[in-house]
Length: 257
Image 1: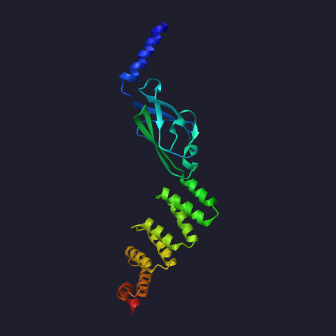
Image 2 (image 1 turned 90 degrees about the horizontal axis):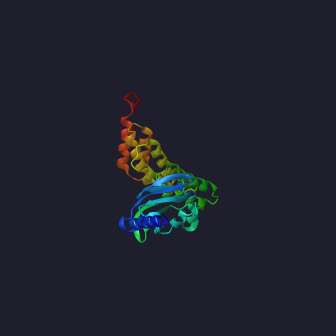
């Protein structure tokens, strides 16, 4: 009976190792105590402080013999043996970096499949770091890096804009607002951009925004008057005259008299 069991096990190993093509089916990964099933090609969004362990790799290889994990710049194999905080395995152990690791599951030297770890801090992490940074130059650098990582986050953009204004960096503030507003038709966004250009003494920028505001509000005499004055100061007298004329045309006849 014992010999038969050994022969049966040997046959199973031989068949699994040499007769069946090696194949990766899935992985079972523990993230902060919660199990996740990962199939080849999956992408996991993780935080640097997440604690991770790879509990099981499901392959066609008996006992996962000669199965290993490989990733450039990241010790993925360590996650097979114990739970680790990702922060400790990242290059330079800097939690405010964005890391993208492709983890390959290999049988000997053959790739069976891969999955991706996308590790980055949260927006709230950046906001908290900025609020705790006393040096204004360093605080600005923190917010700039945060916006580069999360370019569409409105909270970060507002925080960076407020910091530019507080430090009197009006040109930078205008560039950020212009980039954010784009071709917007939002009156409040354009008014904020106008005030920023005014603070930066950017006449060309003021005229550009005033034109957009007048297009949105053609009957607004105050906006037209501001545009006319700005054009006049730039010696664009014919264009200024057209704006003054448009203001007069909006005045009722009895008031004109």
